[in-house]
Length: 123
Image (tube, rainbow, N blue to C red):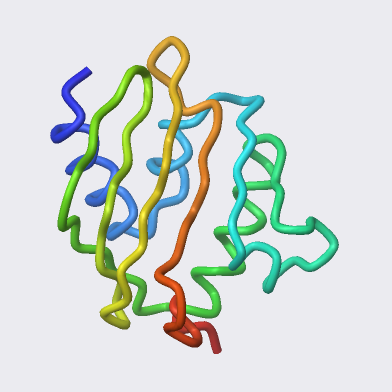
């Protein structure tokens, strides 16, 4: 897979705020973890299972961060895995670690720079 092309498409999809476009990249049985998910939806413990759980999380995130915007700064490729490092609308450095099966993300992890306070810019 062309990881740079994927990262560019992923970023464009996020910046469009069109969750259907974003979710196209993910398998139905995806597992995703994020400390921001734990803040927004404490009952999840930061672990989301399936596309509908991701949609619920990201809908809430977009509601709270209407100016959400990503700029990719680095892309790291591995075997069926990509790490997309980006800056968000707040200028915080974030990395998404995404693992693939059959061209779809099956596992993802949102990771945030340590010591930045409110890295996602939640309201």
